Image 1 (cartoon, rainbow, N blue to C red):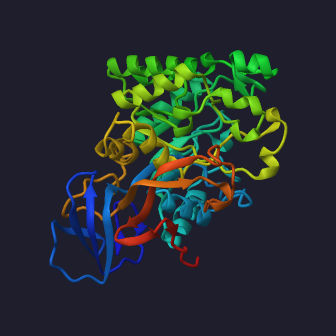
Image 2 (spheres, rainbow, N blue to C red):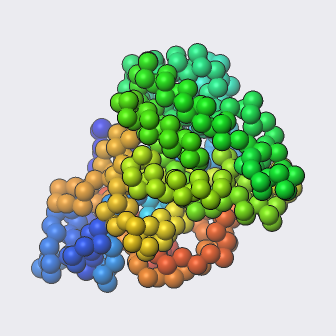
Image 3 (cartoon, rainbow, N blue to C red):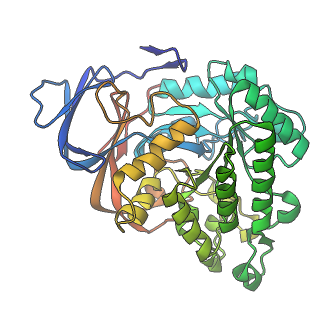
Length: 446
């Protein structure tokens, strides 16, 4: 089977699959029948014969999760993550599509590099891994990448970002916005004025001052959010703000949307629940960019996600080796694992506390991310005629996060030893089971 709108190859699927006793969006219990990678029947006690059956035992059925911000490190840093291990981690976390950022070695600024990532991940058959092109060549911030060539390549690059670095030159960013508008692609900005954050590993606040760590001020993020909102207003393309982390950034995005500016924003699970109080240990696992903020920032971020000011959740999954984290805090590489814990963090924080329901989870972790990047086939309703990209989730299932148990090649989870109460048990990509009973399937040989 071939998908001409994306150039992707479909993984080998079960010819037919019956998913029994599941609750779409946490609602009434039904059976779901899948044939040739598509949902063909939904109803109670379906009388059908399938090549394979899954008994959901009352679990929640969601659209396959979509993460528009991950780092899978290949090419160049396969010692910390590969497409195979990253895809397995994604499948185990309930994801059927992820977007891997351009700060690879070499940088993803050429069609051939993006195509190699896309085709290899498709051959693995665990997750649709979409390469993100860089905004500037070599992430150097001086010359714009050929958006058109990459968008028309076999990888069908839909989003461009220098994530890890900010496009700090406003004229370069203006030109990128104008070019992106003509090519109808999405720009995603890492908002950080480096003149304010040079060698700063921690949020600028009382904790950093007490610990003797140089502070990363909110203004470094907020000033770029404001600047790029205005550039987007005047020169017009779709702009996405990566890993929003401050109460001020929330207010700026709210203002931009009120003005009709086509801007969207994401938040990471760790910025929703973790704060700079954790830095008391000087443990490098807690160094991340942007840094963990204060309590009132996390409260504002959670409310903004509930209110729709922040559009979606994205993990910013960033694997690092122990030699990059088990060092002095200021020398630790920024970044945390996220793919395998994201759904549990969101469910435990919002659903178990009664602040949101499973339809909302589907919106912020599947539907809205797919809409932002205009990704066909993902984030779709659970309905007859739709692709069978699905995730089964067990409620009231306790498990302990351990880096050593994760499918990622790295172990730098900030949730080491944390008890969660919601667990992905099964992930299905176009009718193909990529994770079963909480264990990712083996990738196909490449």
